[in-house]
Amino acid sequence: MSAPTSECWALLSRISNCCKASTGYLSILLFAISVFFIPSISFGQDGHHGVGHETWHEGFYSKLVRKDTNVSCCNLSDCRPTQSRMVDNHYEVKVDGAWLRVPKEAIQNVSAPDGGAHVCAPEQVGAAKGKIYCVVLPPET
Picture (tube, rainbow, N blue to C red):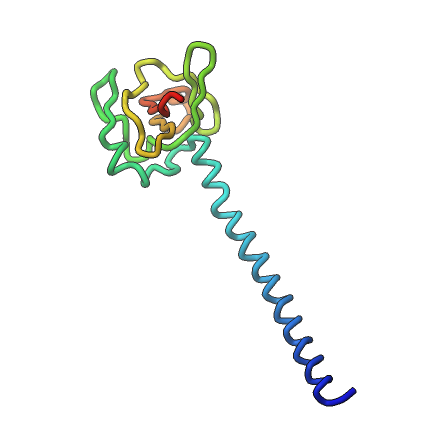
């Protein structure tokens, strides 16, 4: 083998080793991203307590008022984005991963800035299980 050819093979070998190392680092980086970000995305869609609240608090949640008590719907982490659906003659929203029936008095007559569904409810544990303060439904399509 001539000198230039052996130098080329040596260079290709180094590049190959570098790419293998980069691929390993890329795999680790992608795994880390999925561990940290994908659960928060799915929690937001399932109306998990506190997830997404900070995005909407100042400009939207802080202005919502409960119809039954005339006080704020929001207690610094009670409101969050969620999913909604119509079942028979009533609405349901996902709260902490479970579908709950929306009381008529909890429905706010406003649209969210993102056009999505939002729920204000305590963490669904103990006596608070099943309780909903306020719901913002997406516009009818």
